[in-house]
Length: 258
Length: 110
Image (tube, rainbow over all chains, first blue to last red; front, side):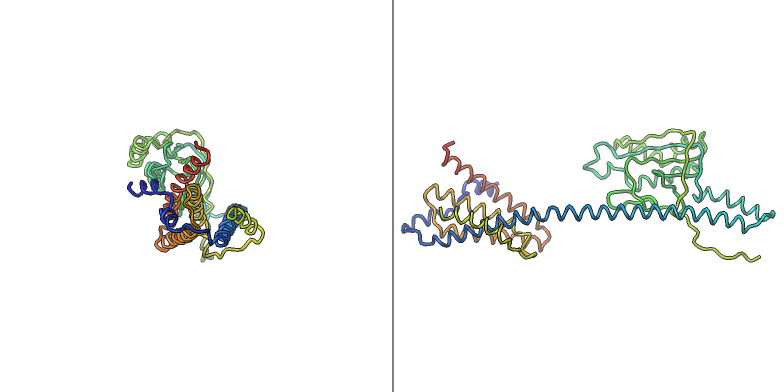
């Protein structure tokens, strides 16, 4: 505080008084003073010019970046659509190739059963809807926000409670799904989510919610809701429609030896 | 009168000629300007108090600008550049306000 006091008490260089007491002659350095004034004025003008000149350029750069991100996202959506149509084509081709005998039919039944489990096809049915969100006072403390681990725990709890299919904000979870933070957002299937988070899980309506609440994930989220005031709503839904995970693609195929 | 005319001439020159500041020096320009403003207000106050001498003004102006820029430069090298810049602005800002208040009192007796 002593430093601040000194700054306030002595805002003018004390040398002014000393020098004034020493030299009492006519001012000799008028031209240097004028030159210095010119330099100061030029400094002001240049700085102001540069700041005003740089502002639109920065804005332009920003909009350009946003545009690029949006374009890339559109492209990704298109590619995902193409993946879905190609997957359908693969399914029809597979059905045609398998033929129509008993062995082929049993293989197809197996494929149909497994497709739903691994997230290769869209599924529909009754289940629970869980809506979670950051606590309202979430600005300061990162722990008041929903983290990737919270969603991981939630999803694992639902699997544990015998959920048959889960999707978060419309992104279907599969074996290959990663739920993780990237920057400020949580990503599922490498797509960033926006709040609030809607987790839909298809399963047995009679047991799913009860078993989830009793699991360790239920306890985890109860704790978050009570101690950190996060939004946490769980409700039964008669009809849920979960899309397929477009990330599930055929990676390897070979001709059957028959 | 000469300093005021010089200031105006400098502003006109700066806008007219648009000299480009080298990229390396650009971060120090705002800090140098704050230091210059501090020296200007100090000089004006000294002028009103009748103790103004151009020698002290020139020396204090140049040393203020150089030291402020040097502090920020050193800060940039050790990774606390923006904090040190804030410190410089705060300290010089206090001085500018105190001097401005004294000038106001001397000019308007209020």
